[in-house]
Length: 239
Image (cartoon, rainbow, N blue to C red):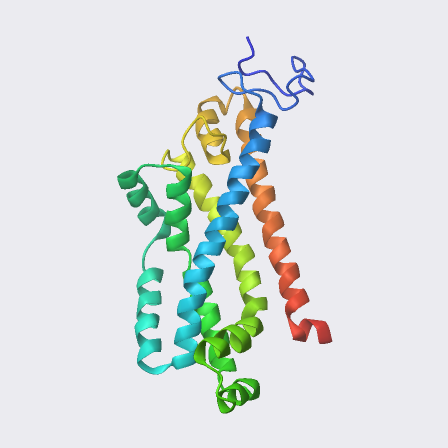
């Protein structure tokens, strides 16, 4: 009886289902709210995993240079040559779609931006006076990398992390839309879009609200990243 109920502002809508219901009679607003937990969790965990991998590779390449830099740069180039969506779809079809699988796949595929940024910034800092002073005092390599280099590139990495969160949310929604991501009945925005596409002409709300929440979430995360970049950039502070 509750299938495809329109939103509250529609003639046949009611306050019991403010944003309407889907083809199984499930409340759209409730599923969007629960789906927020899934998408933000995936975005945050994927950004952390890819950040650890990419930052480790980038710092090592930027600090040591030479053959180490050549090998890691080759790995980064190889990763950049791989289309993320196609690789994720292929691996998800082999391993089966689930929340854990999506997080691991995206975490292992989205580290390249962290590596490129951390490598570039570390190359600029490895000859800095404070790094040279730490070497002169006999500090160990882990101490120099963790206490001298990493804190000084943290600002750039935080900005990259926000961008990768938004990227991960979009990719996760894409995989779920194609049936290779988080599986039903778990509420997820991409899967909600996929389930509602057949009603695009007759029940616009079933498609509009999941798409709109994806748009707003990614937009807000990107704006947060821009704000952090401006706040953490010394040049922006001086201006």
